[in-house]
Image 1 (cartoon, rainbow, N blue to C red):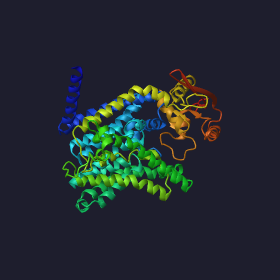
Image 2 (cartoon, one colour):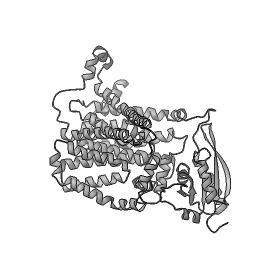
Image 3 (cartoon, rainbow, N blue to C red):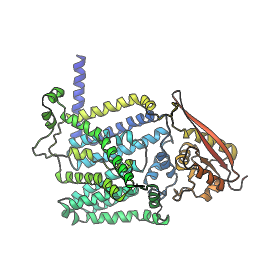
Image 4 (cartoon, rainbow, N blue to C red):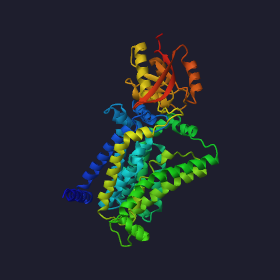
Length: 534
């Protein structure tokens, strides 16, 4: 009787999920609730999985940028810094808050993906797409670090949504919205020109292109985007095109073989990440009672079971074609362009370019979508998330990189920040307001010190604009050089030239986690008092 009661409850819960997912009024409530649950669960998971290490320096860099709301930060447009600045004005500068920010970012992107799906498929398929996106590692494990790449999971879905809206409505308002979406995307990272270019190509290739091109929408979009970007364009000119100089100096191809390796790694990495949601979706759609025996008896029938040649009114074929075109262009274009033009392409640059794959799959008109598939895939998501949450402490230990002596190699920047803050207060009796060092160290001091000193990077041609060297000298600063860094000699040379007479101290830090010790890290530290003080 208890077993029957449990089965009955599960069936009622599954029926309720389906009913809410297909109801136009209740579906937004279900989607928002599901997204919040995903964000909360994965914030808890990431906080435990990453407990043995400090936040990634991309996170601390975004936090440092957010200390001043500028029109650009040297190597990137400003949007990620603005978001971090707003977020941490409300939340504390703790590890869990940084993971919450990352999950809030992907959560907004998930809702935007659902809104895109509604332009292409019915409510039932749109919710299935949402859960597939939640299973895509970019929106959970791989989405742990907040940076400009992750913010694109908000701006690019909004760009695609605005394009689908403009393509359908072809009004002045839709064109303006598309232009604003394009400008917002470019204010995140210039890499989004890949998606903007894909939008332009898709509009030109689509059979309904003349209806769109004869309307005011695409032309107003261009004008609006350029107008919205004028302040940032003026900033780029004022800093002598610093972001482009940074890219040309840091991402250099040494040989054709390196270019091929990078492209191969980029393709392999992103294809591997997509296999999980696609495999789970295929298994859920093909599932049937005693599926294992059916698959053994008739493998071909098991594979073709989810497919039908009947007409499918739940798919808007015109908009589905837009999705297929967009995803194909951004999937194929960047690696081919990188290979032929010897462009440095990082695996993380694919983070923002494959969010349309779940929809592109579900929008295939011949693919059947039974109602029972919705609670099934939601149950898979919940089960995998809860299992991961339960195993998180073990994952944290198993995933720690170790040296030959068995010590884990995570450096304790948070401990160093605490020590240096106390030492500065003892010496200067004032707030620590400036730190000099390479980004990987200096920005961590900005994040973890209670004083949040602004960073200045030595020997950097393209600075963030947060602090000039003159301001740094007036305020006084702590210089930090890491002997384990390949740039250590350059850092020491800079300190000798610019911090002559400074108090020099060697500090050691070591991180401990669950009774295990990390490697010992040594730091060469220079205390430079404020100008006018001895």
